Length: 213
Image (cartoon, rainbow, N blue to C red):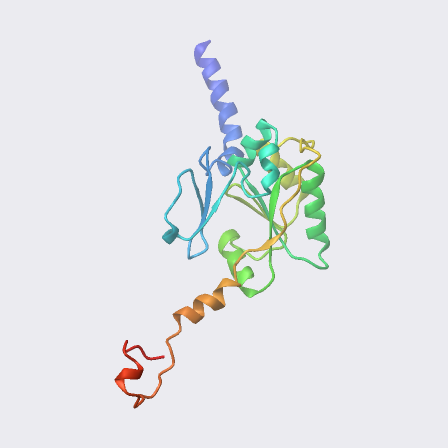
């Protein structure tokens, strides 16, 4: 009898393992999302050095809005363990609009990353292995292209409720591009060598520090 029960339990575990394993790559108490120089995304429960790449805290939400602190405890736990991110575009994109509607009707707290240029497309390919729009990530699981049945199945497996549990005051975070291009020109300017200037014949008294401008 004991052996029979163990066999039945093992069969059940094996049937459930493939889907669960795809969602189990994150630490259960992940608090930081790290995007490395190569675009690889990792999660950790300890603050990593800034030299490891772009570090984004996950304040009990997995990447959505500050109001996530007011989420019910059971929803906060699943959001922290399996954060949801939607990669989409603005403008005319019926599939992107349908993706947002699916997530919001179900009450899924999610972050939206927008593809606004070639840099974002390159970053999306590094994250997901493709350039499909829309793309959804649930923890480390990547779902390329909209499939309501598939998305709902993975959200179920992650532990998200089928019906919205979001408080009435909840606000989704504003969409943001994947890459930060605003800071790139400043960094490039800092890295660019100063243009060479011909030596001047000014007396030393006029430039006592010896610094040339």
